Length: 83
Image (cartoon, rainbow, N blue to C red; front, side):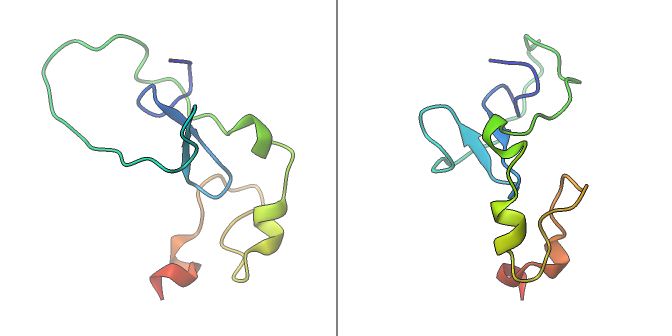
């Protein structure tokens, strides 16, 4: 479980999908509430997938430009899947 991983599981791609080692983006995450102490640093910053750091394929392929630029999170209001 590396620093910057979402819940210790995976990292964000530029398209805002979570990529889990060995599974890619084909994963289903569930949330559970607990009062148990958790290991690791919950305040560690989010980390972008290494392969996405210098790539702009998603940015250029997005027809509504909701991915890209200097923003980390996509502009979901412009995303075709929400239309």
